[in-house]
Length: 175
Image (cartoon, rainbow, N blue to C red; front, side, top):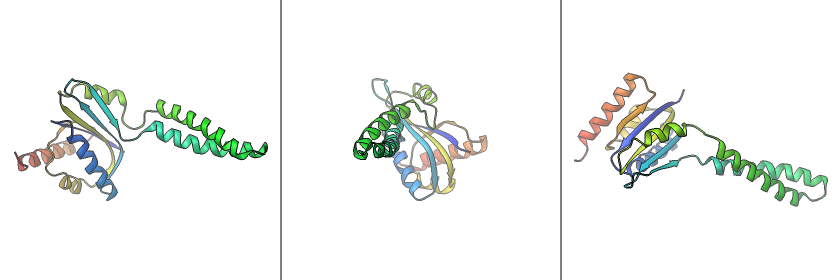
């Protein structure tokens, strides 16, 4: 079962840096991230969301490929597979992009927006949906980050350990 962790940061860049570090750890198989979103509240108070998975592009790509395949097969019937591929690919890409724009994958967007609206100006938050993790190794790799646990679906014991690890790292880090 996936666990949700929301970390808050005092500046607008730190959430991006932590997500980048988590992506590196994912390549080392220390963490398996299902979805991640960075929310930034700028100096004007406007909230910006950065999704880690672009569902529109993914839908357009898969739609183009499947539409192109079906278009080629239909084009073979009419002795023009190239035109069938192009027409089928274009229709498939459009349908896939539309489907991708309507899909809410991973973390609920309404939940993200409701939390992001509570962020202080010039701050950010990282929303992570984690499937599996090696907690000791990941926390050791993230030493020095200054974050506050805003929300989690972890057990109270796991949440306490995470907050203590972040606080001890904050105390040990440069002032």
